[in-house]
Image (cartoon, rainbow, N blue to C red; front, side, top):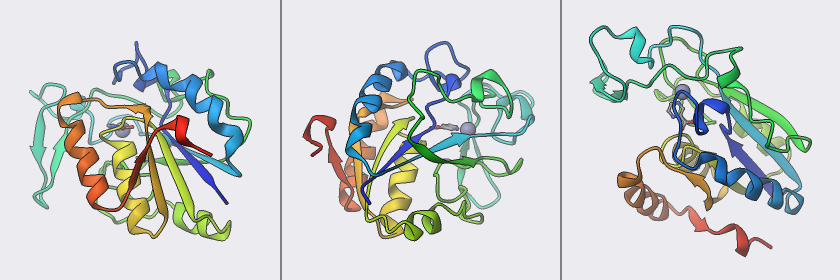
Length: 203
Ligand code: VGL
Ligand code: ZN
């Protein structure tokens, strides 16, 4: 099963959204165009309860994008409040064709732990079940696109390769929150065995 995983194409990550990604909307037509090349399409949806720990509003005196150090010494970015369950910003864009999307994996529902990857939360405590779902369908080749390229798409790809999938990162069908760290993120992915490809080279 050649599978496409579409990460977090939600209004809050699109221009005008709470955590907008520059030109995030520019990838949607391209994602729609390639869908016929896949046997299975799955999506993820960032889905936070109100007052989520990753929200800047949960930390007095902090500014959006400030970083704090957690008890386990990991860094946490304090995001503008985004993708609150049931809000318009949390909806998957209506411009994305979701007719062929067979499953939507929601993540970030634990109020105390952030969750970038579609496979695990950031502490690797909670498994979303995505690996099992894909293995049940005998998925080997997994192609990943969506938003944001340096956070949820990146961490999803890094977990995908760890979970044993032949992982492809479609670089023209993603956009980063922070352009400056993006080249390094791509080289980290290459080092891990992820193949960075362009949509025009898909069979
Ligand atoms: C994302 C930051 C916080 C993403 C989600 O989808 O890349 N980034 N929550
Ligand atoms: Zn989030």
